[in-house]
Image 1 (cartoon, rainbow, N blue to C red):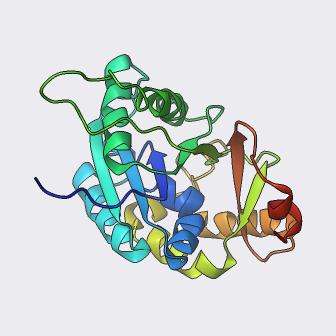
Image 2: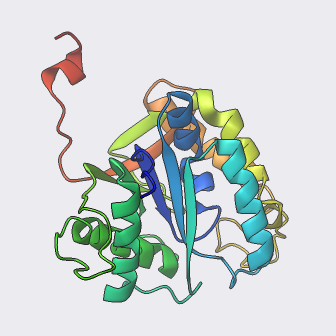
Length: 245
């Protein structure tokens, strides 16, 4: 029997290829630099998007994967623009969680303006719970032993809320930019599309992404930061807060 790879430390569940890179690419780069095992699950191929195609997005995702040094990436091939939090979809994602055994999972904000992001966030929350059930898939095709992530966190695509946690991603920013720039099809947007409504409608996506990171970074006295939301209490000890034994 082939040996299973080591468990992931950090897994991002993203609705579309590029969602993880644009929102938490800095965190992924920093985690990798710190020796952590990182991964992304893309739920759809982005085939319904205005720009690019499924094949092009897959090629771009492959390049971004190399840049970020991810240990794992897969695409579940669920329907873009029609993503739903169904029992069947939850179980497919739960199987990935059981296979990769991540300690920390990052999930879409369920108040996002994009319906796929909302569905992905809901699906991820449910799948994290289901993955810990012993009898999720009893039978000859039973997946590996149950696993439930230690912590779930929310990442943000379109909203800029007050964050529960801001991560200093200054050291990983150049890697993030290279990963984002791998998605050239998504950076060649014209302002006429969804003018005044879609945050990514203008060509200066990278500029606005950087301005946002500077704003969050300033809150923690860092150059650049990425915001996260807590799902459940933060179980820090006094040593985590103040240092020492």
